[in-house]
Amino acid sequence: MSLWHKSFLVALLAALPAAQAAQPAPAPLAARAAAPVDLTGYWVSLVTQNWQYRMIVPMKGDYGGIPINRQAKDYADAWSAAADEAAGLACKAYGAGNIMRIPGRLHVAWSDEQTLQVEVDAGRQTRVLHFVPAGGAAPDAGKGPSWQGRTAARWENPATARNPAVPGSSGSLELHTDQLLPGLLRKNGVPYGAQAHLAEYWEVSDEGGDTWLTVTTVLDDPEYLRGSYIINSIYRKERDGSRWNPSDCTLKQ
Image 1: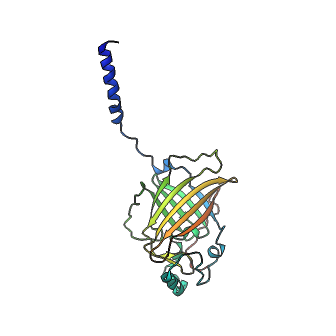
Image 2: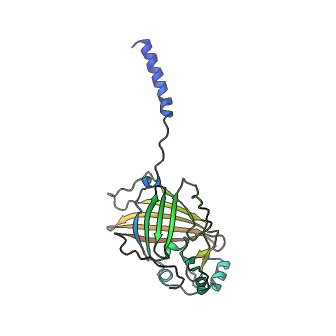
């Protein structure tokens, strides 16, 4: 090889890293394309725990399992379901802080490439999950606090796709919700306030021929709770929406 060819080859190799570095980074996948699991479809809640608090309205004064403070107890002891119903506040127990605990069904669908919509037949509620970068905030609709608040979502380990050939494989969705209207954790008056922050972790798994959704909820509220209120809610995927049955909010049984 001549000296000229050697010089040309050295120059070419030296230029390769610079040329590669100049290549634009690939655009990140949209949330829908990056989804490690398919959450779309219909899901029914299974009441496998706390039946006495979820299937019936507990007696006033029965606040077991919730780390309420004195202010919350005083509120609940004085609370009136009839007064809230008359004031048009029947959806107080159907806010994001409690909606996943109310027996019923979910209908999950993409409204666009970055937004999941979760309809809940109990109380005819709709949650909107906006996918944002880690630590980011969901867009502010400018409407102020609401029952379902403002939810920022992200996939945990989105590059790890769920493998249908491996039983029990799963993926996780992380949600953070703020801008909530004050609501109820139970229909016997246990409150959460406007400063409450809701973190959720949705895990999908396959077992026994069914697809399951486990929702772990962590609610922090400096106004009414002494510590984090942590609960798990379980859903099973349904074949279709034939059992979908929307109902209005009520503070009665």
